[in-house]
Amino acid sequence: MNLPHFEMFCEVARVKSFSKAAKLLHLSQPAISAQIHYLEDYYGMQLFHRSSSGVTLTAVGELVYKYAKEILKLHDELENEIDSMLQSENQKLIIGASSTIGNSALPCSIWTFKEKYPQAQIRLEVHNAERITALLNDNQLNLALLENPVSGLPDDLVSQSISNDELLVIAPPKKPWNERTTISLEEIKKAPFIIRESGSGLRQIFEEAITSWGMKLEDLNIVTEMSSTSAIKSTVEAGLGLSICSRIATQKEIRTGTIHPLTIEGKSVKFSYQIVYKSEKSLNNIAKRFIRFILGPGAPFC
Image (tube, helix red, strand yellow):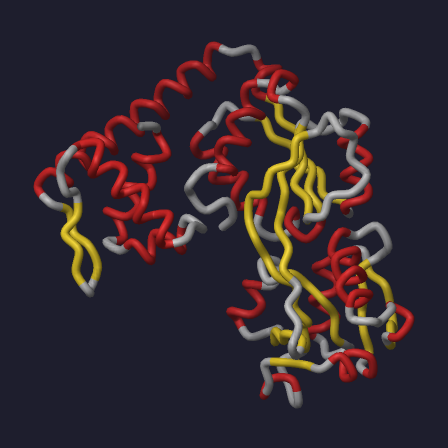
């Protein structure tokens, strides 16, 4: 029995659905079900009534929910009191992130973390993956978040997967693209194409993918290179070409309809984000908490 069990249980109870909780926690539904079964075995009682419309708490489940929320609240209060006793050096955290994640989902996660740990003094460094890797190697960062694969890291660093994503072709929301969901490799070759700069993790992932399909960057009609994901999205929105971007970095634009996402016919480019750091012994208190937070059962990114 540990705190993540209670966190997961409380989320299921809150949304009244295993599948909704699984989606919010970025877990599979079988994983959620297994954890709830573990709790029910531990207490020897059924905690949820199951039905086709969702789940509701049993009488025992209501009791466990009451105490679980209190336990989680008391643990947060304990950590905040410990924080107030620590020296300020233990509260400083320098996080490095590649542009893809650092300019989109991560700031919201840091805000959520700061709400939970208000004593934390956090600085976020956003550069391309190559630059972040160099800063990490030079001990100028406590930890970093990068796209996988992470190359050029020394053997003494720990790398753990925190979330999955996919590479999309992004297009302006107009004909012919807004009437379609896919694009062929031949169409990609012919269209004006905007690419991230050399050293970008996203560019590395894209290059490796097209190489495996028998293509090279030189086969594309590249009109410009840009070092900013925001600049690329603005250029695509203006109708000046196509580009590639991660789904997580374009979720706002896709939702508002200012960018139209396309997948490549018969192809899929999946990748994960990694949190990279030195051994836990080298981390200060707040860095350890951030790692636990980002690896926890809650959604790592907003």
